[in-house]
Amino acid sequence: MKRFKLLVLAGVVLLFAFSSAVSSQRHSQMTKLLSLSMKTVSWSAAELEMELIKLQHAFRRVALSDLAADEARMRFEIFWSRVEVLAVGAEARDFRSHPGVEQLLESLGSSLARMDPDVMALTDGDARALALLKQLEPMAEQVRQLNVQSFSGDRALFNLKRVFDLQYEANIYLLGLLISGALLVILVIRESRNNRRQALHDSLTNLPNRNLFQRRLELAISKGRRKRHRVAVYMMDMNGFKEINDQLGHAAGDQLLREVAARLKNSSGEGELVARLGGDEFGILQQSAAGPEEALVFARQLAAEINTPVTIMGQRISPRLSIGISLFPEDALQPDKLLNNADTAMYAAKNEEMCCRLFEQEMENRALRKRILADDLERAIARDQLLQLYQPIVSMKNRQVILVEALLRWRHPVYGEISPLEVVAIAEQSGLAESLNFWVMTRACRQNMAWRTQGLVSPKVTVNISPMMYSRYDLVAMVERVLSETGVPADQLVIEVTEDTTMQDIESSPQILSRLRGLGVGLALDDFGTGHSSLSHLKQLPFQKLKIDKTFVRELESSPRDIELIKAIIHMAHGLGMQVVAEGIEEYSSYRQLSLHGCEYAQGYLLYKPLPSDEIGQILSSSVSPELQQR
Image 1 (cartoon, rainbow, N blue to C red):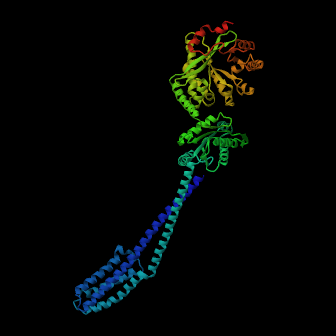
Image 2 (image 1 turned 120 degrees about the vertical axis):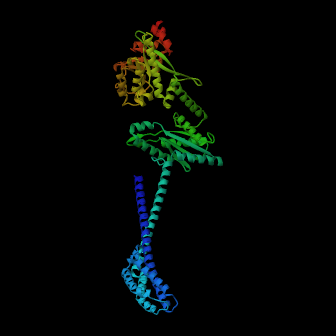
Image 3 (image 1 turned 60 degrees about the vertical axis):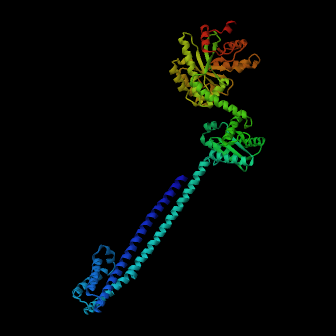
């Protein structure tokens, strides 16, 4: 709205300036034309009187025998010609418009016509020249009056006044033009200043933005080099800000950002620059910082002041900042490196109780390792360089292999074995979650088809879905694509989803899972007992299997309470129409107790370790665990 008003004002100024310029030009043209007209009338009258005076002088000299009669006749012809030109000539139109001029010219023409025979008969020394001179006297008086009127008569004075008035108006318009130009220059300067401020400040919080922060950091480091003092950079972002945006809306998120910005501004001291660097990320620049310990104390005080609850749109929110600190010259000598180090320390601080960390070189090593792994993981997925093992899941009734769980493995050429949890975390942080999940599911389904082609009784394959694949991508579309490309029957695929994953989007989870069931695939609730789901939420989800987490199974022998808890879980699952899978079975006694209490399926190192696909094919030939065959 403000910009629209400025544009309207600028348009008005330009219109006024244009009209002033046009009016000034027109008035100038009129003044020139009027002045030219006045000069033409005055010049014509003066020339007419001058020719008449010359004619009078010629007649006088002829009478005194001082001039030949032919010379006098020539002067007579010149004067008569002047009268005729003024009477009919187009260039004398302005002169004839003067009052009384046409009548005078007509009278002069008639008088000259009467004098013509006498002038033609004039001889040298002829006394008749005096009589002709006498006839010219009335003409001379009339011409003299005309000449005076052309310079100082009422019309001349009126025209002069009009010229002055027009010049005055032209000056007024010129002044308006100058004022318009000045206003336009002021508007341009003001808009330029606003644009410069907008380019260097955040529109939401009115704090300096990343550009200005970067400039000030460069100046601070340059000054620090000259004066040999420290510069500290504090990088901050809010944990869980996305969830606040998703649950309360962007308006609430913006209000929270403004509140945090105000708190940071109030908590900073003189000489400290607070900036919003983007999203929920803020920065503070200290140009004359103390040592590392003092910087850490300041960060903790800052976190304590910022992390106090605030009410946003009727909701009580507790913002929580993660703060990373990097110092010049200890941690880096260049601005970009100093910012990167503070950013690295900030992400490391997310695991700290006080959410504050000083930069350490080991952090950079870990960050470098993560970047290398992310780049190499992308290539490994594209080049099919990952490994997939399969761990059988057996029926406790007949000890047959009913399912196999696909387990991802990656051996890096430099860092060695990378844990599956780290592989998933790297994929989600580097935007590879969808491609990784697609690779795992496709490989598992193709292996199922390979076993079927070999004539084996192929077990169903279960595939774990990463949290981000479930919450941010179109899981249903990906499953449809895998089933279509591999040709595996839908009922041969079981998708495992953890408790916490289903809680990330409580409203959409029933719909997502129902659509998957509509495709014909199976669903298993993984790691049950370690998450935060509620029974009211659980009963809405169309799972067929529930997997008891291995932490409960391993403590069966040492904790009688866990036995009762597992019995309750099995009873609850059966009540909801789900079959139960026990994970992590390593002791036969645990296997026996779970079987006695109604658990349908077993998985663990007691039965089978994760194995390559060819070894799984050999097992499928007997389909009974060697370990159980001995029991």
